[in-house]
Length: 147
Length: 147
Length: 77
Length: 77
Image (cartoon, rainbow over all chains, first blue to last red; front, side):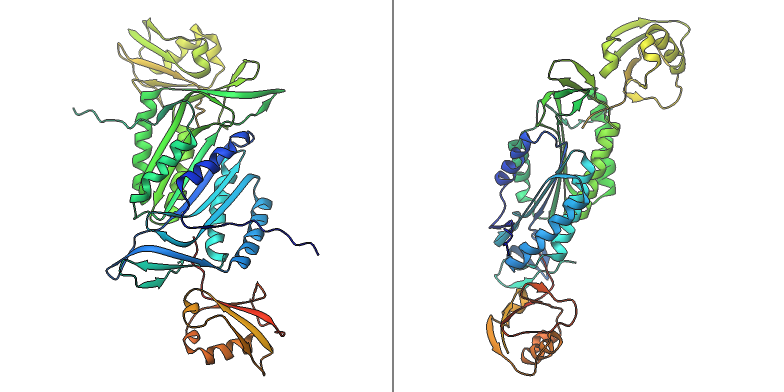
């Protein structure tokens, strides 16, 4: 039985604008691409019962998340004519204002990139075993829930 | 009569990944934002009758485009709960693989950013008086048409 | 009546920026006929006019010194 | 039967990683009852099980040395 090598989507800590720029720059040689779509999730400084969120600490069931992400990736490539798809999700403590999710899709014409990106974000939030613990400024916490 | 200062969307030449990174980085202090959406148009090396597109040379009726963009911006801000909206379009010669359009929207939750970005790109393509001249590798040209 | 003509895209290849002095033309429908006669290549093309930066959707009267932009279909983005 | 239990998110605060040795439990429905009895906080919560990295949608039989993950609703992104 051959073991399939799973693509890692997890990065330790926040996703930097420089990382995103490098990812964009790598596509300059892919001259069949006409449209790129990027979604970025940023940690909000929400106020909950008078306390502000200072950071979100992300953990995941990594092996299961990567297996599931692989399924999602295959579904999306089968459904949309994409040239590229990249997904990165943070683990660990991400401060308010920092980026914790980066989804990047590219296609010859704009619609598939946009639609695939939207569907990817929906599925990542609904199907990947990742949990966010909202850390308040007073170091108390509550577990985030995706609505 | 007060003259309204129009926001300039035009940049000379290609939009660099570094410019995009700077634009993203500026939002780290805007901690009410939870989701960013970016669309980027990239010049495709299309093959047309056996010749490859080497670059697109963009020109615009700039004053009219900026007035129209202002209307679009107001419509979109009225329609979606956005925190930020940024639009940049290249003028001049943009090589295949380079970025010529950068649309960036941000909102507390992801849907408005995504939907507003999609609508902005549609309206920019349909309503702004901008023209692309496709320059082939042999220096002949044809005028681009948005389908 | 004196009009300033500007043109864009493909149309700028055969109609250059110019001042024209015309009589018997009082609205944009008449101006279109005049332009299509003067520049026969325009006749087969899709284009729009903007008068003083307002895109014209239906016939509109013209006045002296109006600035007329002749615009082929847009292709930005 | 020996099972390895792992847990995540809010649930990891009261169920730690552990090996359990149980009898009279042959499927995931029975395991849920066992877990909710052993860890009363779990009873009122929404959660899912994954057995050996397969998320369980309906009752499924268990075998010795299965790895059971107890997962509250996901909140990534």
